[in-house]
Image 1 (cartoon, rainbow, N blue to C red):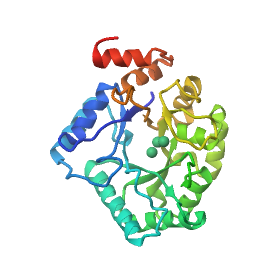
Image 2: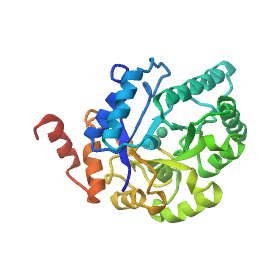
Image 3: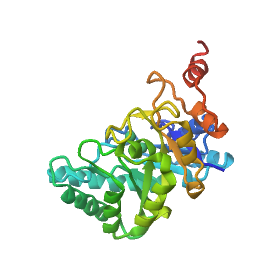
Image 4: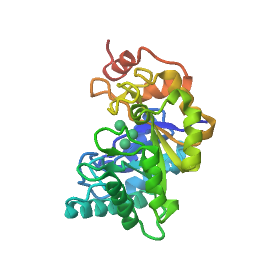
Amino acid sequence: MIYIGSHVSFKSDTGLLGSVKESIGYGSNAFMFYTGAPQNTQRSEINDLQTYEGMKLMQENNIKLENVIVHAPYIINLANNKEFDKWEFTCNFLRQEINRCNQLGVKYLVLHPGSSVGLDREYAINNIIKGINNVLVNDDKIQILLETMALKGTEIGSIDEIKTVIDGINQKDNIGVCLDTCHLNDAGVDLKEFDKFLDEFDSKIGLDKIKCVHVNDSKNEFNSHKDRHENIGFGTIGFETLINIIYNERLINVPKILETPFIDKEYAPYKFEIEMIRNKKFNENLYNDVYKYYKGDK
Ligand code: FE
Ligand code: FE
Ligand code: ZN
């Protein structure tokens, strides 16, 4: 059995219950959400009743808690402490985000390691370590998953850099990794040789640290350092390679999350992408099927 789902919304008026309903509508048994808008740090109170009802609905639909992921907003940057106030704010925000995960019962929080911007890279990596060590407290249950990045601009997040960060974290049980297929491709990892990559990962970090995989095709060439996601089978990675990753036995229990683009920026493709992943059969009519489903025409 695979655990597959997508990024879904988490709205202040429907909370976790709304996210679960959306996921079920796509045929998912895993999902990921931001606790508010991904591009800002404004967050509203979490409604415990909606959380409780969401949990109940998850249970009824066999969605396990370990297949629910929160993604921290991508604007927070632990690597850059040039403005100390801002860096402190970021640390505080991350702490609050962990508290929100605790309140929601979520065990995994995906975090982009950050960008060095004008700073020396090694120094910036050390800021990430300091930040996470600052934020974690003794009995924390959360596992912060550092995402592998496309290495666009001054982005940090190669396998070696993630290893350096993990090595510096005091509470090892609270740190892990989220692979992103688009990012790996764009960073120059040959996904056609995925087992070779896993061997290397295993010797450097350990496969047991991988708790989530973002499954995205890429609009750009191998090693382009770009980071633009494409729908499954429509990009440069291709359907076969992505299917092989999703069904790889060594990561079979790890939830796979789609972050592919909406069709015409409006229509979620996930129901149909999940369908083709379950059938292991590429659907070249994805766009039309999505239009038909949401608009009832074309
Ligand atoms: Fe991400
Ligand atoms: Fe991602
Ligand atoms: Zn990305």
